[in-house]
Length: 166
Image (cartoon, rainbow, N blue to C red; front, side):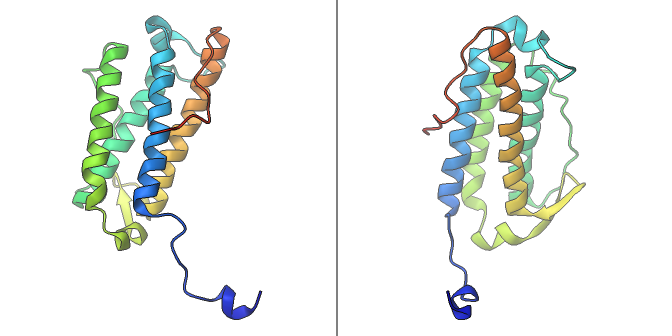
């Protein structure tokens, strides 16, 4: 490959719409993992000192919706995992769907150039918007992996990890 090809103007490998579809595919899979939990174990089961599935899910809910709203509003909020109204697994699933709608509503407000802008998300995480979004996705995958371990330890077959159709 010639040097001119290496230094040419970069082109997009993935569009914002494709990135959103990818993220929402992960969110759909994570929701199915949450659904697979028995109610009691969602709140009580853990292994090796890891947090329970409800605590992991609460973290994901505290990041995704508020994070995307910060990105589109330029208003910095405080990060908090306190969501007192979440008392049952169904409450979490309703909030999960509400968060999905927030993401879908706010996503089109992100101009393509905005993905490279540096923001100080939640007043403490300074990085380009695209890196924050990658973090949202990576963190979800990480916590979903923990929940897969829990489900298997409970004798429950989790949804196929590759089935992210959205």
